[in-house]
Image (cartoon, rainbow, N blue to C red; front, side, top):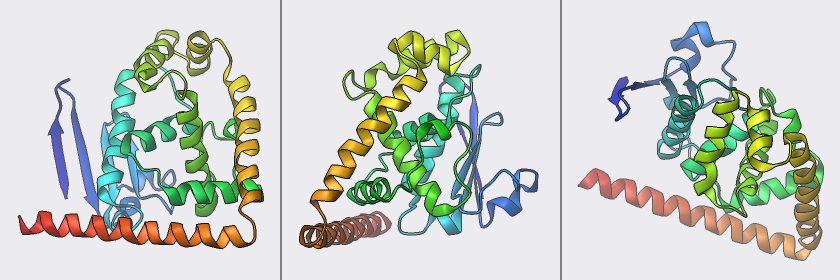
Length: 236
């Protein structure tokens, strides 16, 4: 199924929903990870959605489509510079409101066990393994949101404008913030380990199981509310 939407800027964006994204566009098969749910083809302003994967409980279409649209819109704002994957994926998750209590819990466990990658290693691609890729998504979200924690997300357009003006992410980043990407990566990694490892230590033994139970209940409630809303929409 193909849908085409014309935006106010006059540029059409196409959303293709298919049973198998890799089979649909074999020219991209090598670039699409096997665990991928949807893909933004930036130069073509096109989105491929693998409907079988997108309908899994933790990858609903109401999150997948806004996530990929974020990539297309940012490409229009910054056509002359490549963004590191940790920044672009963190921004897309934030705009799609994908973060949950479960993500926080799993990120904490990943930091504690050392499975979470450093953002300086997430410039061009994510790990091929799905579980490690999920860790990469989570750390990207936290890195992006931490970057704007003190100044607010209203500053995002100014940062993107600086990057486009310099036609370089690293140069625009340094000019806007006054520190380099490497400086931020080092600070963020230290802060991440201090923040999450201390929480993980506090939650070992008894409190750990109590927290896990709360997470489980929260997931069930969230799933039930989402399903109820979908049924209500269908009835209307």
